[in-house]
Length: 503
Ligand SMILES: Nc1nc2c(ncn2[C@@H]2O[C@H](COP(=O)(O)OP(=O)(O)OP(=O)(O)O)[C@@H](O)[C@H]2O)c(=O)[nH]1
Image 1 (cartoon, helix red, strand yellow):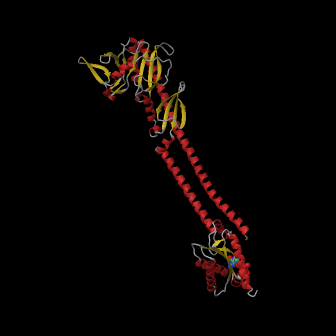
Image 2 (cartoon, rainbow, N blue to C red; image 1 turned 90 degrees about the horizontal axis):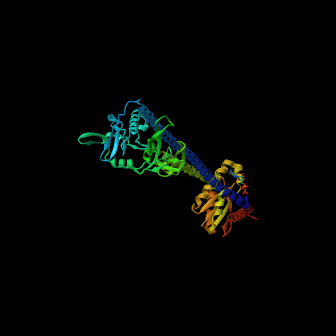
Image 3 (spheres, rainbow, N blue to C red; image 1 turned 180 degrees about the vertical axis):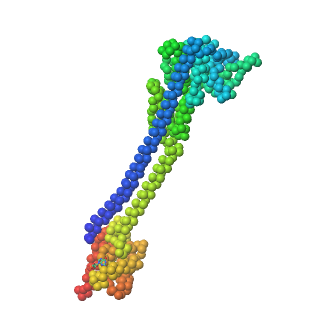
């Protein structure tokens, strides 16, 4: 092999080394990104399905509440009509006046065994006969309401608003929170909470907002100072389409809707959900739960007016337990790929190392030379080309196996004489060896070669073996291949001289 061929082989090997590294990195990165993409897709789908489930459930509950309110208002209308016609007995509710708050009130259904009060009807003006009939109807409707429904367990704020009267219906709450007030030593049956007395009279005295729509947009309630939507249902004096006596209005407060969100198993443990009610007509968002609006979004329609929007805060999703599992898997995948990358690199390094070794002698082979070429030539660098004399005859006489063990033995001898930190032995092929000395001058190298020659002669006494060699100092700036070629020529000259001592 000449120097040009060697150069070509070296640059090819350099290229393949680079290729294999780039290949491993590319495969690792592609695999990692692929797994990330697949996991991201499934994580995204899971987040969306959670959002969709929450949105569907919330819209279903709100819709059923709206339906419930409508049924309740229809029941009040029906009962009112019956009372008016004298079909449902007489009016039982009793109007009373609370001097402290200046409010007229009527007790509604009190569920004493369960310590629950449905509420009181309260008005700042004395209730007219018609208003008393409505109050009685509301009382009766409350009694026949399904007490087991989720709705009946919710705190409720609603009021009746007619042309001449505004009746507020207090919240459902435990009886124990009410104070039975006494008037002149006589038991006074009107319930008033000490905390809510002022609030109630304010609420009642505030002019009720006239609303033309069946559903209001989100507004801040003047008394409770909280965002509210009011849904109103007509109470009819005759059948539907007849005269409207007034409106039963149901306030949806943020806290109530939050309660619904909390009651959804899915959102109770996942604080990454942001839930909004979107008023489609005014394009107003009414936040029910959560803090931000970013993330995956899903929109579920409740009715013509409202949509539920659920978004998922991805960062929070990952911080909560469910997301943490995803992160752990992602981390494990990253570690697996890192391990795979390191293993691949090691395999390649070992294969490259093997490719630079001669399998018979364990010395470097010719392809290792490019390493030397890459390095800056050091001062005091000397190369020696060695070739065994008449090796063919040894093979022919003693057999190839003996020839092999001789070559192996020469390799050991060479290694034994070299300084492992600065000198290298290379099997160039067949019975040819190259020695590279870094840090020894030519005379030191020649002295070393004398010792190697005698080692070989002594150790192969049964099968006499000699070597020829050529020594060349690598001049500053000289290519290693040029030096090897020079040493090769010198070695051949020496061989010729040995064979023809007379010439
Ligand atoms: N046993 C063995 N023989 C080898 C191996 N590689 C090459 N040879 C033999 O080594 C011999 C080398 O021959 P040459 O260098 O051409 O000639 P030579 O007999 O050494 O004679 P000169 O070099 O002129 O002194 C050939 O017969 C090869 O077959 C090997 O790995 N093992």
